[in-house]
Image 1 (cartoon, helix red, strand yellow):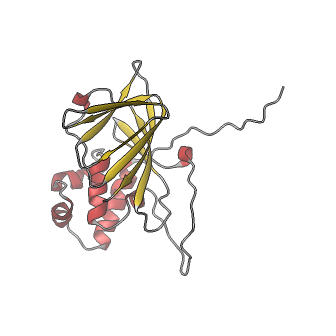
Image 2: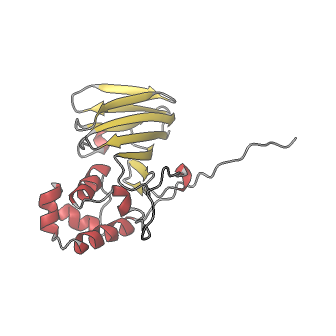
Image 3: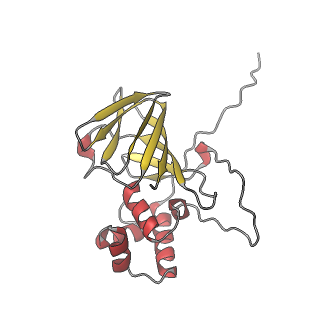
Amino acid sequence: MSSDRVSCPTDHPLIDRAHVGARLRVIRKNQKLTLKQLSERSGVALSTLSKMELAQVSVSYEKLAAAARALSVDIAQLFNPSRPGVGVVQPTAVSTAIDGAAGYSTGNYDYHPMAGDFPGRSMTPMYARIYARELSQFEDYIRHPGQEFAVVLSGRVRIQFETGESLGIGCRETAYFNSSVGHIYLAEGEEGAVAEVMVVMSES
């Protein structure tokens, strides 16, 4: 018997960090900023920014977002630069396929910014795959301005906060929190289990 169900692609493409580093360098150079000036604006160490541009290190969302804010660009511009034509009207809505959105791997997470072609976004939606299982896999907690909403698409995660609090959520469960408080997502369940999460972040 035939089925009417249409299977979805599950490629989850990842961008080479050299591409992200090159984009960061081009944007910085276009704004005539030195690495030192960008470091002072963003709070990201000069040595880290240099390694980011040279693709010598994969960095957390926190550091990429800080560099993007300091350059006054949407973080999605570091992944897929948009090239709006002259006189193009701002769209009412845009659609992004999760499995086709370009992503970046930190080793602990793969994250894929969504809706990057919507101009002047006030929220940053992101699909993420969580591999990390222990706090010891991180150098520090992740912190960035604003608030964060997360819904688990598959698996189970524990969100650990620097306050010592933690919150465990499973499939179709949600969390909402102040993202300036240090936090880390950890996958729970069987060894090797990967959790999928959709996150929406605000800047204020």
